[in-house]
Length: 82
Length: 492
Image 1 (tube, rainbow over the protein chains, first blue to last red):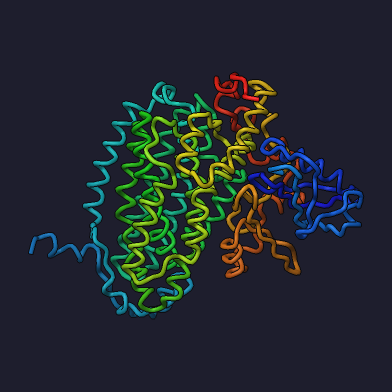
Image 2: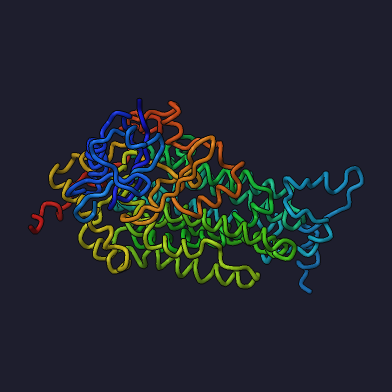
C-alpha cells in the first residue's frame, strides 16, 4: 500500500512529497529521498532517516518503524550538508 | 475659501437618511464590517485626495494618453526582443500576477463603494474600482501583441484561470483579501497593509530597475499604476483609525494577519525579481535593502502614528527577509518547468553580489548552487532535466506556497494533526493564522491534497499539463545551461 510522506532532506531548500510503500525498508527509502533532492543537494556519507526526530533502523520496513501516511520524515547524511 | 471647496463635498461626501429601510438593513454587518457603528460615527471619515468624478476622469485621460504614446513607441516585439532574457521573466511574472488580481480588486472596491459606511469612503472606493479596472486592462493590452512572439506572455491572462501552483497560491490570497472580507478588513488588508505597506516595493524598486534595463513600457506602466494606488490606498488609514478607536484588538489582528500574508506574496514576486532575475548591472539595492527602506521604516512609522504595535510576526518577518526568497528561488529553479517564465542560474558575479548583500545567510545557499552548477557541467547545455526535480513538492496549507521556509539546515515546516486530517504549514505564523480562522481555510484543497485525492496527477509531466503548461510555454533556464562560467573547469 502506498504511504505518502512529507520529506525534508537536510541541506535542501524545500519539502517534498514521496509516495513510499508500507513494506519498503528504511535504507531503500533513504536512497530514494537522496535521489529526489539530488538536483539541489548531494547527501553524502551514511544516510539516516529521522521520524519524529528519532533515527530509524535501516532494515525495518515503514510499517514496522511506525511510519504512517502523511508523517514527516527527515533525511540526514553523515557528512556535511546531508 | 477657494471655489472648489465650496462644492467639492456635494460631489463626494453626501449622505442621506433612510426612510424605507433602517441603516442596519442597508449596511448589514456581514458586508459593512465589524464593529458596526451608526452613520454618525463615520461622519468625520475623510481622505486627503478628495477627488471628484470629473477631476478623476480628466486626470486618468491624461495618464491614458501618456501610456498609449509610450506603448506605441516602445511596446513592439522588437523593443522587447532587445531586453535581457532574464528581465523578460520579471515582466512575465509580474504581468501574470497583476491583471486578474487587480480585477478581483475591482470587485472588492465596488463592494466598498456600496457597503462602506461613509459617502466619501464609497466615492473614493468607486474611483478605486475604476483604477483597478485600468490596472487589469493595462498589462493585458501591453502584453497582447507579444503572445505571437513568445507564448509565455499568454500567461498574463491565463495564470488565474489555471491550476498552476502559483495560481493556486495567488488565488487563495487574492480571493480572501479582495473577495472574501467585509469592507473594513478589505480596507485595512488591501489599502493599508498591502498597498501602503508593500506596493511601493513594486512601484519604486521595480520602476527604477525597469529604467536601468531599458524597459520603458514596464517602467511607464508601473509609474502610471502607482499614481492611482497612491490615491486609493489612502482609504485604509481613516478606516483603520476608526477601528483602532473602537476595537484596537481587531485592528491589530488584521494588521498582523495581512502583514504576514503580504510579505510572503511580495517575497515571491518581488524578492525573486530583484535579487535573481534583474541583470546585475541594473540592480541598485537588494530585496532586503528595499524592504528595510520602504517597508520596515515607513510601515512602522504609520503604525506608531496610529498607536498600533509592530505586527505580531515582525521577528519572523525579519528572520525570513534574508532567507525566504533564496529558499524559494533555488527550489523554483529546480522546478522551473512548473512555471510560465524562465530562470537564470546565478553566476560567479551574481553570487558574489548576493554574498555581499546577504553575508549571514548566503553561505547556506552557495552549496546548493554549486551542486546545480556541477550537475549542469555533468549533463551539458540543453539537458534541462538533470537539474530539475521530478518528485512532487509539498505546500503550506495556509499560504499555499512551497514548504521552503526556514533554512536549508532547518526547514520550519509545522505539522498539526486534527481528527479529520493532517495539516502542514511552512511556518508558525501560517499555522497560527490558519488556526485562528479554520472555517475559512480548512476545506481548501491545495496541490498535494488534489494529488492524494486523485484530482491531480502525481507524475510531474502530467502535473505540468494539469497546471495548464505546454512544452512550448513551461519555464526553462534562460540559456539552457550555456553559461560561459560553466565551461571553466571547477577547481579540485
